[in-house]
View: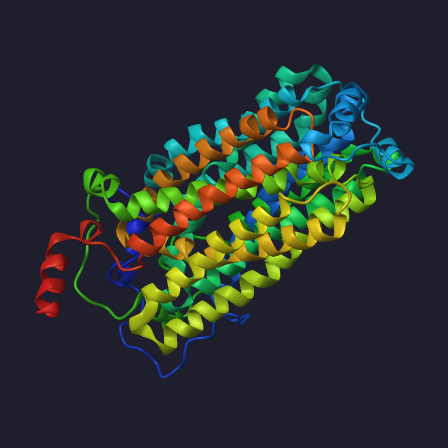
Length: 514
């Protein structure tokens, strides 16, 4: 249990928590130098790995249904509609199906007769459940501490993952409920993960830390797409059912390690050195107490509206790609199950590598040009929004059968999204040090709404999965990304906002500026 009081207990320690040190800690610094971030001796490195593992474990439990769905559903129900659509030359789709395309369909031998609308409802239930929990995120963090709430969410995910095969056999309603429960467990992942990260990493390491721990998500997409497609074909271990059991076991391991390693703040850790603690939190200064969240100023701030817009753009693009990419490759590019799994995983594997590059470059440039931090952040965000929008716009113009170009462009699109690491992701944990959970919770609420609405939108547009329908989907996502990118160019910053700081500090900052 955390030892401190305040409205957002852990956020109050982010800006200058060193004054809250236990009185038993030595007051004088030694000559020892602090360990670098990627040193096994660094406690913050172990915490970083655990946040990344948490993102990975919960991510595969979330994404497992994307590939499993194409294994679970019997394509015969919609095959007639798809063939009719593909013979309509006005849609820009393929005119006839070749023998290889028919063979590719045969590799998907699902048994559930779920329509596109029913599948969309199942996917969307996850995000509706997450919306409920993210609305309670700030209160839960205040009452129990972010690490405990994240642990509880992880356990909820594990239970729901093990129950998914049983629920699927019971029907659409049952699996929809289970996915909603799983979503409730994951709704708090991003806001509270950001809260823990904000407490554990100094500003010159934030972008790198974000690149590392959010890569847990990208690796979960890679595993879910690549490995799940192979598990589907192993009938001896249960086929697609084994996906949920295996990933649930990984989630259980994550919960155990999380409970053992991670604490709310560096002060709660028993195995951290004095020099590393000072490196994270800064030298001792006057005490800063938690303040009530300035909801009115925050919600009416152009920056907050910009962060919300970026969250919506990121959510819509990621949910579409992680949830429906296997379906796009199956119906438009006519890939068999094995190729589908590999090529669906490749974009996120490349995104994983790009995040390290973008995050590392962003932090390196910030150290070299400390007065250009906002410019660096905006450039990084432009790569994500405008770069991804351009690639999706081009891929939307591709007709059926251009698999190589489709994979290449989608890989470039997801790689561009790595720019969010040094862009608005960094802003989310920087602009309000005392209210990180509140800022992330608000942005995440809109992100959850966008995530929940995306399956309905995609399902409504792609009734026959023709190339023309996917053109509409990709162009819509591109427009949202461009709009949010323009907003961040105008209002984006990583500078702590006046409304987020105590009044005494605001006066001091104004005096320093004079």
